[in-house]
Image 1: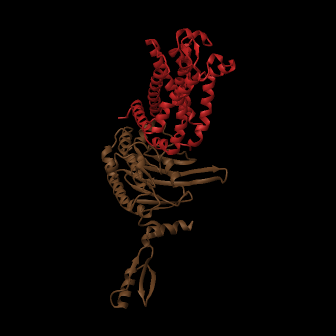
Image 2: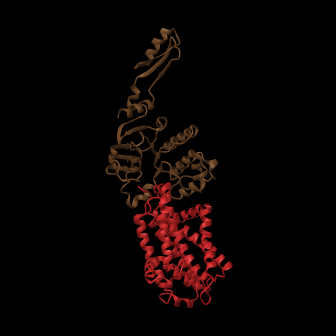
Image 3: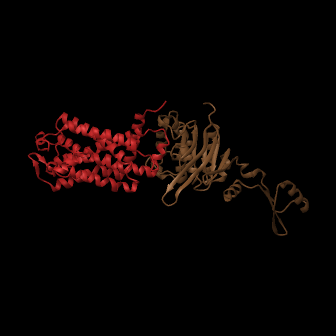
Length: 289
Length: 262
């Protein structure tokens, strides 16, 4: 299929039964469509069902209901095709703690053997910024360096879809910027990327579209710019007048600034005009539920 | 092109050996523990079991056989739940690696560790306790297939059993008593023919008794065969029992193997 969507989900359901709480819906009917070459972010508070959803798409968990296709295949019914399907996807899980006694280079080179068309291991190590640590044992890496190794192992197979579950936890700001550049580069090469994250600035910097999940349901799917009516939300204008901070909200901030400026006869002390950030919108959204 | 399952299995084996060699404690333990046991038992029991057969000579056969069970079954049934806890298996599950490649990797690790362990045991035994090494080509060949088939059988049973412990912390408590009881029942620490009959019959259900007997056929004089319970080494039976357990273990391992605890 030429135009198959990368990820297609309808009515996905999954519940867990525990002795303490009885049956709980972790995923309560989710629809998703992710196109080829798209960076799609899933946002939501802890326990919202992000990881459960992603692990069903990755073929780690069974679902209770709904339809799922990843690269045209149902991850729960791979059968003998499992190899070919896994050869086309890359997975970066939440924290792992394996292979402590191997070096970065040994591990990346070894994983390249698993795939039919791997990337060049040295180039991948360079791309994730671990060239200086290539010979270091994994147990000597910092948390952020380990995470970058996880990413290296996720992309070594040259995947068509890359799943990233909270990929930049523990990164310093510089490493995060470098990671974002890498993700953009992968997307430019045609890789579809599904990302879960806690960081709103990360979603804003990377994602073409975001979905907000709360209590196993999707509240909204939109671009970061338009999520929650952000593009039409009122702007906040603040300034200093008579030694006090003044603040108003407005749909037409430019007109307000012109008015202020004429009142002050030019410059307005400590003038700021702020559009709501993605974080403001997101917090408002999950607070509503 | 799809990488071959067998080739990836051997590559995994190489990686497993590398990791194993870098864990100094486990290397020292695997190599020296049998030697220490030989030293202790060899110092306590000085007498001959038969003309020209020292207790050490008898005991080495049992030590090598139980080395196969320790290095394969016991080590894997403990190590695989730990790998599940650490996410090693979950990560592999997300790659195109076949479980069979993973199994082959483990078997390669067990076989290589066994060869090194047996080398150390025979070297120390010959140097310090007058251990007689096998003296015919036939015996060396039998020794070789016993180690090879024993490693594979023990590996696959360890993988199959690894589905039982819930996590790495509890694994040792589940696995170790089974191994120790089998060692007592199978004639590793005592002369098998002197054990109660019900113990002998129970042990005959499991591979360790047969491996021990096979190793005696390699290390003890031909004349000693008459002192076996069956008055013979029963070589064909040994091969059949090991093969049956290998096949049963493979079916169980493929059915029950869990990449993660979910």
